[in-house]
Length: 159
Image 1 (spheres, rainbow, N blue to C red):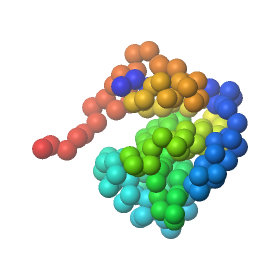
Image 2 (spheres, helix red, strand yellow; image 1 turned 30 degrees about the vertical axis):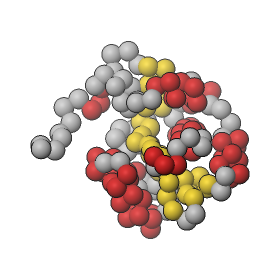
Image 3 (cartoon, rainbow, N blue to C red; image 1 turned 180 degrees about the horizontal axis):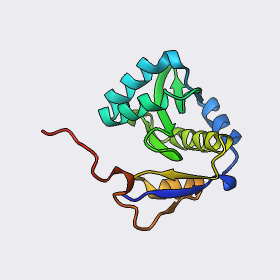
Image 4 (cartoon, rainbow, N blue to C red; image 1 turned 120 degrees about the horizontal axis):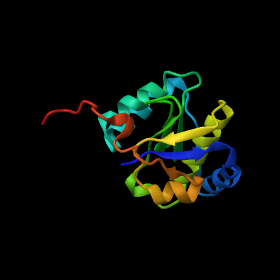
């Protein structure tokens, strides 16, 4: 999967994304350090131990570089940045049974705005899976020649 580039100075407004989630009873917010064990365990259970490792790194920043979606006092989605490389967005995901409500888009836009507020002009989406989604929501473009990119040579579990 190729990497994608996002111009942070051309982002959509965040408020409509947050409001749409609130109307559905979903809260999008930055995490708190004491929530680390809950969020990391949730990511490991719903996605992978690789993503859980990256999520732990996102918690090492102050404030944490991770946003979560909460419904009924439980995590239902997450999005990180600066966890694999500086200026990189991801990993991100929404619980499979909770998809299709715009939560992934809200988490993406929240992270992109946070990156802009942190002083970045551009963000890289590393190893972007749903490229059409990223293009539609934040006008991301594929970076030519970026596959496998920063993940080249990464150690994997032997089975």
